Figure (cartoon, rainbow, N blue to C red):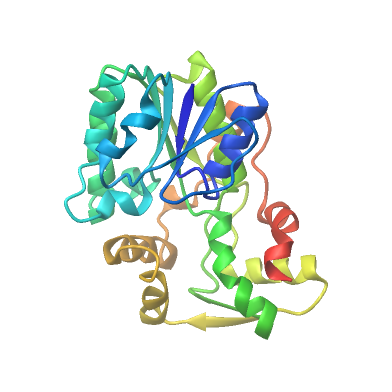
Length: 279
């Protein structure tokens, strides 16, 4: 049995589906009750309180660990999840980390994630670490303004990074959970091209077949919007990258293709599959 945390999110949902379609027994973990694929067990748990995972981990052989905001919750001890997994008999953990652990190691959110990576390496378990850059699905919050105003609002409109399709992350995660050959790997996951927010807006317009205007936000406006969903330190770390990406953050990684045997999918492919969110 494989446990997927963050199972209702942009990575966890397609990962859960892929594992179920591969014939695996899957336990999907999320904070709240949620619809899951047929045959998948659902457990509600808050990763900020690792003891709540005890039921989910019972009988599990592998764990996909996505911490997100739980990494920064007050009094959070995310390394306790790794200890609990080992004590429960889990043999393999695939951790969704961040590219910034390597490219911006002194950012507060990156220091915290590095500590989790280090704990996993020292756990005695089989492991793999996924370090994606920006997600294509970060465009989802534009959905309402595109639908109601025909507008995308974002900072640093002409600064691009090679954002990655979360579906590609999910496929890489599935391979790392199921295939022994990826054990001990650290995989940097990017898309196939550098693309700016203004170009993303243009791609949405093409997919819709109607104009989409681009409005450039200040950093302060962008941070105010982001901190409705993520902790301030994570917002600052993210804004630092998208304001002035360094050469490592502009690099097109070969790792998606190395694991999956195909090139990563471009942003316009993600938009075509997600266009209902913008109509």
